[in-house]
Length: 220
Image (cartoon, rainbow, N blue to C red; front, side, top):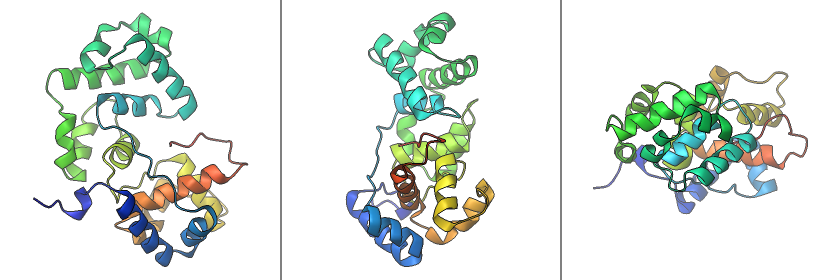
């Protein structure tokens, strides 16, 4: 059965096609592409470990979050929900988890371990259903879902409008006096459909190329 376009995962071929479409739609994106070349596809393995790592990355630098994740993987060699649930609060705080992140990640692990959530089934679901399923869990909001859809499931038209690095990049790219809000970002990128995830990759690519962009660690 052929999937509908919005369910198809990005490939190197479709990424290239999307880049060409966006370059024709938006001269500023064309300038990034001409100057920096295509962005990496940036892919992460779907599943519990990736979603837990994204939760750790909420509202902190990616560098700090991934240091915590690396320490966790050193303690739990096979990072499954069941193995994660063995760790108590003292152990998790020693690894670097905050009180809130303990609650969020334990809730995720519990939901999977008790069959309330099956991450493998998300790959065949539409974005709205995935968003509803994941946001039922405490601590998972739109940004976390966006990043999982964009990086793990490789959906082509997901745009993380709450991502700080993307807002900074678009402000600079468009020469805006103020940083655009999530609502403004959503409106500004509507004409990029159905390739907004490709546009997001271009903005991250642009952000990372700017040596003066030190205020936030970009997601990829």
